[in-house]
Image 1: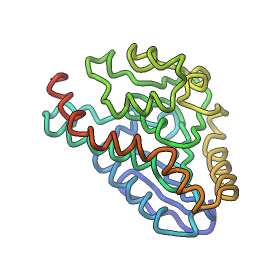
Image 2 (image 1 turned 135 degrees about the horizontal axis):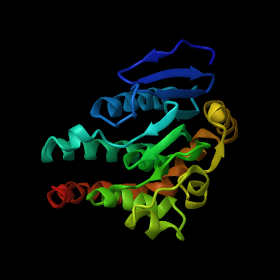
Image 3 (image 1 turned 60 degrees about the vertical axis):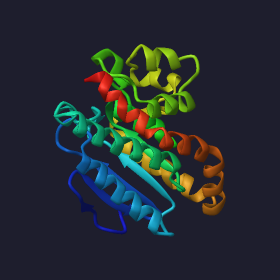
Image 4 (image 1 turned 90 degrees about the vertical axis):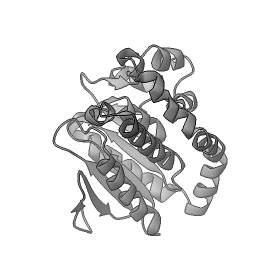
Length: 242
C-alpha cells in the first residue's frame, strides 16, 4: 500500500491507497464481532464518507477467517448485552448496504452468522479458495435469524438457495457460496487482498459519485428504512432465543 501510513484502531487498521480506503480487520483470533470492532468500522466509514478524494472502500479479514460472527461471550452475557450487540451489528450492516460509495469485501476465510451478513451488505465479495465455511448457522445453534438478516438474504442471495441458506442453516464452501450469492468470485488466499483493492480501484474509476449515491438510494433505501423501523421487533427475538 502507498500514499499514507496506516493507523490502527482496536482491531481495525485503516490505510488510504489512492482513492480507496482499506480497512483490515484482525483481532488475532476469529475476528468475532464486538462493539469495539463495530465502532472501529464505523470510524473507517466516517473517514471514507467525509473525504471526497476517497471513492471506494475495501474491507479485508485476517488469514483464514473473515469473521466467526458475534462474540459469543457477549451474546451469552444477558439479554440486554445480546440486544445491544445485535442492534450494533444490524446498524453496521445497513450502513454498508446504503453507503454512498462502493464497498468491496475480501473474505479471507470463514464467514459465519454476522460475518456472512456483512458479506450480503457489501457490493462485491471476493473470497479465498479453501476449506472454509460461509453462511447463516443461527438455526443450527438454536437462535432465530433476525429479520434484517432474512431480508438482506432475500435481496442478495440466489432465490434457489434462500430457504436452504436461511431456514436450514446450510454452510457453503467458497465455490458454492458464489452460486448461492454470498460471494462474487473466489481467488487464491494470497490474492484476496490485492484483488479486492484492485477491484475497488476499478469501481472508483468507473462510477461517478453523485450518480452512484442517488442510484444507491433508489436501489436500497426503501428496504433499509423498513428494516430500521422493524429493529425493535428484531430485538424481541432474544426473548425467544433465551
